[in-house]
Image (cartoon, rainbow, N blue to C red; front, side, top):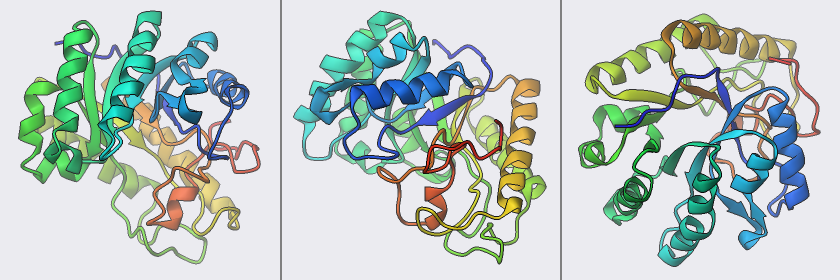
Amino acid sequence: MPTIPFHNPGVTYNGLHSTENPTAAEVAADLVTTKQHFGSARTYYPQYGGGAVDVGKVASDAHLSLLLGLFLFPGHDDWTDGDYQRFVKPAVARGNIEGVLVGNEDPDMIGYGIIPKYLQQAKSDFPQLPVGTSQTSSFWLSDGRAEQLLPLVDFIGVNIYPAWDWQRADANNQPIGVDPETGFNSFSTTYNQIKLKYPGRQVVVTETGWPTTFGPIGAQQFPVGISNARDYLQRVIDWVQAQQVVLYIHNMFDDQFGVDTSSPFNYHFGLIDNTGKPKGILF
């Protein structure tokens, strides 16, 4: 089965990071900025604005490789199918797509049949292209539904984060009870558990990262948050190079929209903050 060739770490990109309706010019500017620091990006949507922004084409124009995500619309399979036909298939034909991801942290879509349907469709349409789905580490390790997907995926796409309390922070707005070293050990242990469970399969880390602060958009940053993010990500990057693992750092930009609001940490994983300024983590 096809695999994604090893490359330097990529980065995740959410076009909704600063607006709910990004324009083609805004996405193009984002991806030009991304290309200055990364050769590959992992996306969540193939289009924005009801089709006004073709993410695959914009990335191709920016000479950026993509692990292209197909967003799944519950109860609106016609929307999902429209995105697949109008944006995923043409994107693959342009030649800069390194793989297709069907869904993200949405195992309920298995029960609706949507994830299996589009995994099968993509494997049929693009037999030489790696196809997978991005789910949490706990899904791949302990959810019985993972076995339903195993015959349909070319690689295990997994989001791995260090174990911490996502609802509370310490006095410096950092995760409680974990530092970059113990966080990295947690990350690598989880990866090894997944690798052991799925021998012979490529395991692609579709997200990992470290939040620089805690709280609403614009929350106070403390220097230790930047330092911890840099320390954690440098450990991950060194490990990636040594282990030759395909991995995408979360996230290029701090997210204001299209973000899981269950934890205030989730607004602050970006390498670039909500004002458009690099935080000084990796650049």
